[in-house]
Length: 352
Image 1: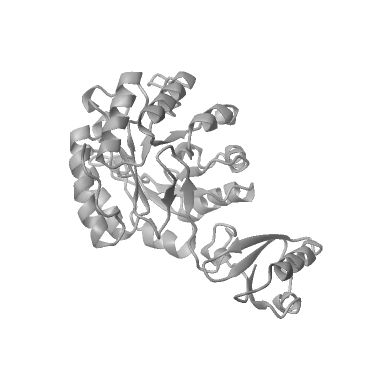
Image 2: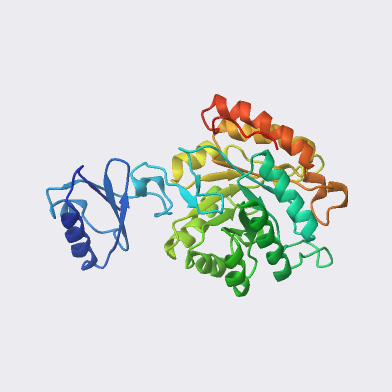
């Protein structure tokens, strides 16, 4: 349930109403929008008469029920307004949301060595990326596949940030590693295999770093949004939804099926920013550029693209990784689409 306050409502009156609603066993959450203040009510509101709340103050414009099972995540909870995630980086704050230019995330699937990760970071930054992605801990289908270098790789990511100023996005697999991952990561990633790891979702929700939540391989949109609800319910409102392809019946020509329909669907359902990962979504480097351009045209807020200096020798996910040269040219291609839809910085990034 949300309480929409009239424009110009006094802060003291909003505080008084919130205090009164707290005595009813509800948890009020103040949301400051562009034009109005909304007070979201979390708790047992099923039998609560909206008129009873309306009578609390003449400054209340209307009281609405949030019909979706996901409450804080719902666009209704913010009275239709989008939220943004602001990530501080050494190069300055990066805003991710539908009112901002597309944020570009690029880098290898896994951190292999210092030379490789710093070289890649410098190249993707020169092309226009805002964040470096790289796995220190890697969930793999086979227990014999490369699992990442772990804590030592986090140090290499920190060195890459020091060298380039890029923000760092890396995955946490276990709640026991969350603190050391969050020390380095500017955005903590919860991968597709952990989307239903509810204890981990609660833990990342209880810390302050923004969270990138990847869609599970077989997750419905509602399940994905409910996973985000776990994070927001634990106290962290800074969540980015990442579509990375879902598993369907055709595995011969593409690794996954990239569901670009989530862009208009999520836009209608949630206020949270949206990222598209065409690398995992297709699994084939030759398909990545087309899907990246399509994602911008369809309204994505961010892109995550895998880049490796030598994909043929990558320790993981080489077939879906672009070379730095191909990434350079792709960013220029993306700029054409981005400018056309008003989602690209002006001027576009200039190659170093």
